[in-house]
Image (tube, rainbow, N blue to C red; front, side, top):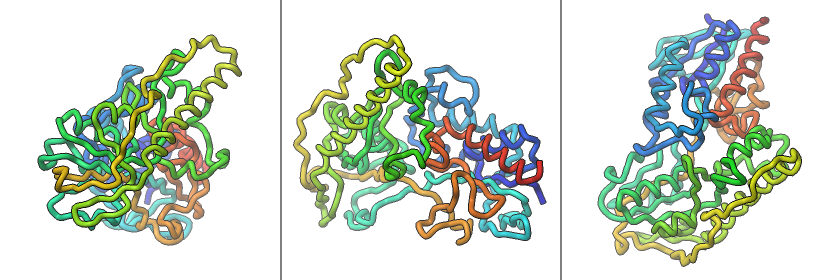
Length: 397
């Protein structure tokens, strides 16, 4: 029996453990794999965080403008875990109500707890569309979670499906590796890197953009949109990729033998990125006006420059010598172990902000858990502090 069990030793789980320790709550952190398991197994070789060091204080002291590599993130999480009561290699198979507490069925047997913090995340299981099964067997297929670098793929051109954060950066990585790349685009916003004398993301944090709450959104569908594109230390856009040599195509809608058919959404997808950039700049302009700040005028941004588009309606994989497809089509999480009382028909946890409908269970690390930043390193410490305070109150402290 323990006061609290944290399930998951990624950054959200470690943030929870740190916050619980600060409040004197006895707890244990269970991790089915190793600390930072997804960060070890699901990042490509050239991966870097796309947020600067000042936004990632959970990882410890670092240069303000540093963009950590995947191995550096893992190393910093290992250091954080060294001060936490983590038990690695312990999988939780089922969570069940037991009296006024909870029972966790694990590989090591049953564990009783008065409170449980679920920090397993909702972005660690790769999703691949059904039409992937119709591609010819000679074409290698892998999800972004399994991509490591160009040398991992067979010779030839590569079709990258999905143009959010992973898709755009993997397309760049393949291009740098000498591959011809066709990028099947999607509707994703983009954040200008620099605007009116500062990094745009710094302006946005100051303007409260990252603290937007689900209930404050005029359009709740925003919560299901992909994170806007922002490259480590620079801008990134579909037009820039096209100018670099990437062939832009629409969303794949059918596969017929060696032929992949696309819709005609490229122009609309480029426009969606531009529209988000315009909204971000308008938010900055309003902040400058409201506070009377002395900010320099906007400078030209190469990513705003138009590009000539002639997207293909289909792609003959054999004729174009396409040897591989990389699916950058999003992630989900596995919450089946929580049981039907805690999970909705869509497979997602039932909750009000971070709290489950049953007393004694909370969540951390989910997108839009309480705020826009809840699903990234910037938001974990704040959400963890709130959850730890609720756990302490629940335990009678």
